[in-house]
Length: 273
Image (cartoon, rainbow, N blue to C red; front, side):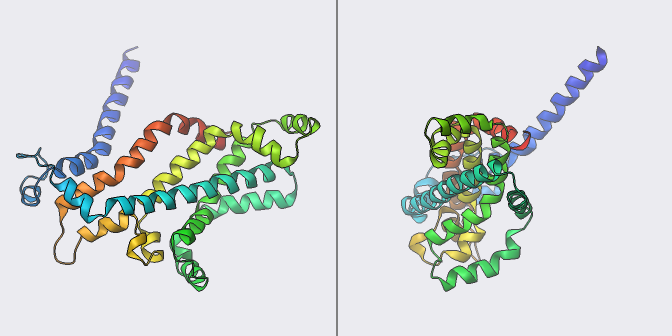
């Protein structure tokens, strides 16, 4: 009994330490976003002596926040829409066709998760550039290719838990394959769909590398690209950069809070079954 209590206390202590380590960077960003540039260097770890919110409207203006926000929303939303539609349909087709070819294609999707983006970065940008697709639409197509492997893997795992008798019953009632997918299968994939949305939204919203090498017009810049301008060669406007980072993470945190209850279930459906 004493050993069980000791184990509980050890787990609580380790959980507390882990929470502090995880929350500490967020604390630094939020607290220092309310300080002046000088105070950030003299009092980095402490609370603001004379807190100011002036950093936020200035960062809002310099970011051209509305335009960069809409660019991020378009790229993130359109990319996720493509991934959900095409990946769920591909996983449905692969899971229902028990052939060697479908098994091979599924394993190819799984293997592609191990390919780092840096290995294909240069040829990818070169090919899209030759088709004049270095823009918001082109980067959404790139995200479709980069994000489909994990999405197919999760959808495929979830579909293994949906009996094929449902498909057969719907076909007997007069549905074709697409109608079975649209009206029977897709609603049952809701937890996995939400998981795919959240995982990819966090990635696309915060991504800097791919937009920095694809988007070459300032009017199409996303929030991470605009935030980079606070970091100059000779000086960094930390007070504005930190306020901009807080503005940038608020939308994705709100999305996560609304959808987080589906994530664990979706990952379990996609990975365990």
